[in-house]
Image 1: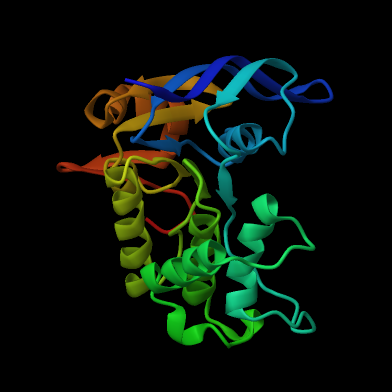
Image 2: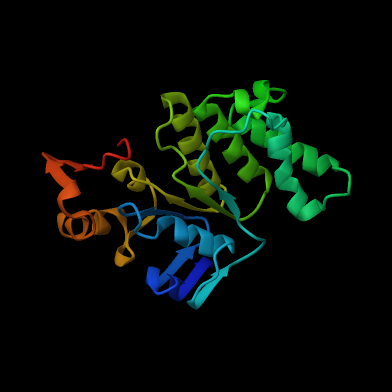
Length: 245
């Protein structure tokens, strides 16, 4: 299979501190990868390295095709920032269009399709700061889709969201993979991770990578999470006060 992402010997340091190290990974095109691990394990650092916003201290990262789309977690928006939902999604097109060229029919179609797929087309004229957290996250994912690239990077895209927003975003992830695109997402949910084709379990260094059944084992999870991991019957749970599961 064609590789969408190839990582060899990746290391990221902040001064003398290793934030992420010894990552070797291949992600085939048209598949999904979940990146899991405790807080501070290097998940967001890995996404930044893939997106090109964080420069490796050592090793090599290769992403095939155009630059990937990076979607961060929704945060509060300054109420003084006058930007609508449609304008927010439209920003994705400037990376290929440039700031001073008019949108083409292709650009407008990409924006409209992304708004519709995330069920926010009826919010297009609303101010971004006036939306709920779930609506705002759907808008940011729509922005990522509107970039119309081959690789989509999602940083905890459904953490803490309402049921509707969560379902919409997870369905879109499945649709992107079915269409032949590659999705990498960080998550604290073992259930959401288990939906993906591969899982990378991090604790600064890789603990395990492979199929969900190969990675989500008691041995691997205890190694990464320690006492914050437990099994109740057939259910795997993470006792993490900072995230809902």
